[in-house]
Image (tube, rainbow, N blue to C red; front, side, top):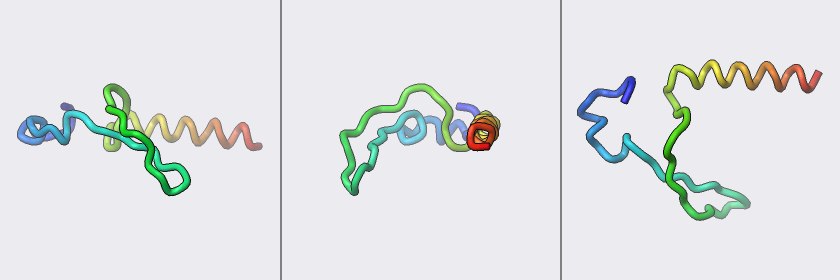
Length: 60
């Protein structure tokens, strides 16, 4: 896994995850994450900046 020490990659907590969406102070059923950008991924900054720029264009 890019950016992580190989020792950390052997731990299950880094390889996958479960996500639950909180709506109106109640957490819905958990689902497992598979693919996509995660916090700390270098592409996440580019994606964030692109989305913010597009939102600014839409609002103006």
